[in-house]
Length: 296
Figure 1 (cartoon, rainbow, N blue to C red):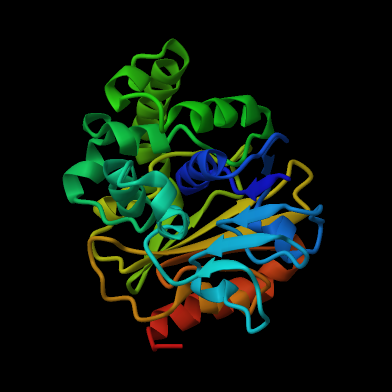
Figure 2 (figure 1 turned 180 degrees about the horizontal axis):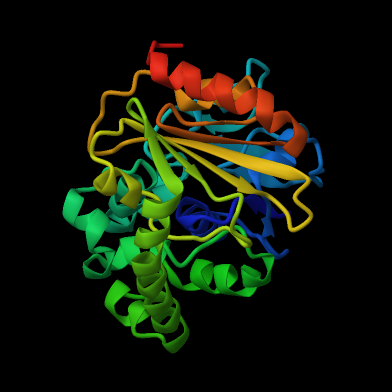
């Protein structure tokens, strides 16, 4: 029996809760939603899938992304909610007996991007938020770090956790990255009507940083489109769409929009992974839909 989930803060907390609720001995399988959507992930008997699209054959499935809804019977919980971890917590409520309320509150807040301008500009003042920014699914070599967080997130006080030498080092790196990211966003983003288009294809590797920072830098935007290469060979492109969390006037469901291009996600955020040669056709269509700002 394994946990199959994605490497983000919600996935970390999902895994920690499942580790306590179930007898899981095998290592966590960390995967990206695009790998599931492309049919690259196969389950084994007893596997539990969390925070990802449904994988046929799994024993339990927990997810909250609107575009991942299925019509076939399954065991587990699907519901549009602030986090997948919240659904797992409710499913095993009797086992947890009221523990982890603050952790769940923070997970809901982070995964649903329910953040204030100060939290966006100064994540270093908010421990759970800063910790979440140290988790990047783009580096598979970080699996040992993700596993460590799973083992500790429900057993240690957040203050003590943030004092860990490795975690502290990663947090300091995130703070430095965010400072540099401000300049790169300014240089590589253009505002098309109320759509902030950030194109990082000229940068290798594409920079990482606070994904909400663009909304404070471009307050006239209601949505961002971010474009970057998915691999060093530049054969595939990742297109991400995110609603502004400071100007909540975007009416386009990002997950449904990107489902048309083989991706998916939430109403407020989604992504798709496409062959690079299709970008010339897909990008203008995505941007025009977002400019029109009609419910889909």
